[in-house]
Length: 92
Image 1 (cartoon, helix red, strand yellow):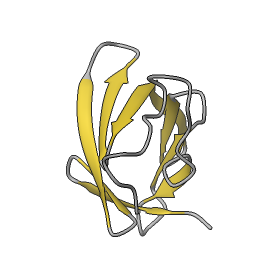
Image 2: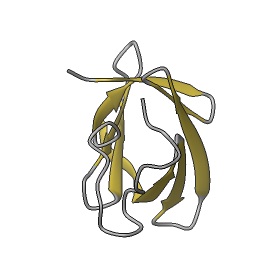
Image 3: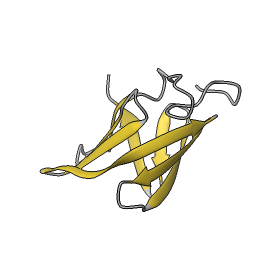
């Protein structure tokens, strides 16, 4: 699990291997790819790239800014991403 002393993703060019990758809801309906370049791409059902934007990580906290300007947050706790009302699990 990440600590507050680790680098941020997307903010200073350093990457977080514990954050980067594909995260999905238990039913697989929502799939959120956190890319190493600080960008994210979220698919919902059959709708690919339903939401895209950038993200930064501070400790276990993630701040999202959608390309339309919408903002959201998330936290990684015990290897699980809690993104607003969603619970996402890292794909192996």
